[in-house]
Length: 175
Image (cartoon, rainbow, N blue to C red; front, side, top):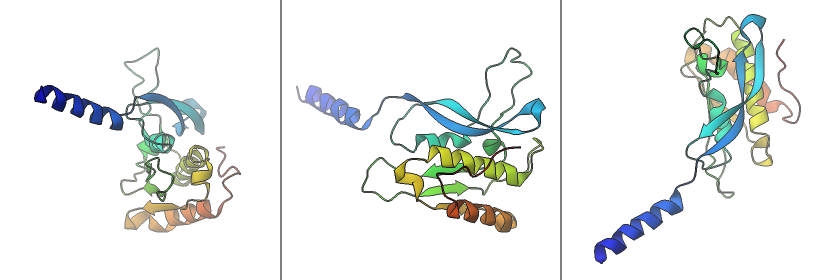
């Protein structure tokens, strides 16, 4: 009987902390392939461990290999944020009392073969962040950035511009 009670306790405790998976929408800066431009597009993601409103922000950097009619040739990641090594995260755990932070980790930033100007890729990624973090909880939170020393000047200027920008207005429109 003790074993059964212990097992039930573990199940009940585990179920109070687990959340079901869900589909959510994020925005990603996608390589427009033949168009030569960046496309800011809504993307559906499967979040296995739904935990907070931060999900869409965390998925801005997720790999994106869309379905295709030629799966042997079309295997490239189209998400420029991921391809260029930009990763977004928040500290939001869902509790309204906890302070919220947003971070852009660019410590693994790299120039990719996609051929887009690095500034445009960063700005398009920040526009995705602006859209995903549009809730009142995130609208005034300044973005902090982690970056390698070699890219600090130009990247810090763009992040500073983003932090000063009115988040209700478009930050970047691809050409």
